[in-house]
Amino acid sequence: MDLQSLLDSKNMTKYHLSKISGIPKTTILDICSGKSSIEKCNAKTVLKIAMALDCTMEEIMMLDSPNAYNNETGLPNDKKYFECGLPVWLQTSLENMKKSWNIIDSGNEDLHWDLYWCELNADINSAEVDNIISSEQAWYLREKYLRMERN
Image (cartoon, rainbow, N blue to C red; front, side, top):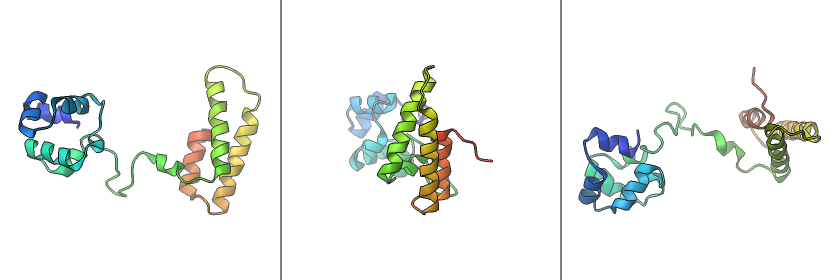
């Protein structure tokens, strides 16, 4: 659910929320349109919106991304965090592979694709064996950048 859906369920307009919360109408409009994110609002703004809608601040913070976290593990569903803190040599291999996939996906031929694919595969394997990255992280990178499937 997003802020607009919550307003609709309470039969409240953006203008009315603005008036009772004291939050500028443009801020409310930006959040509802997706131009701004509740996550980027300061605590005072979130508190005012929560009080106006008779919700907790936590409920308001979850409006933008209700499925952002796995309820069982508490980890983000978006696994992009697996790309943080990688060694420079692995990042370089990833960048080369991304560029090569862009060429291939646009319908053109990249004579270096196989080189970049093998290099990235070797770098992921090396980082995994040396415990620089976890097995889960290695499989995330393989699936995303080598387009491999896990059995």
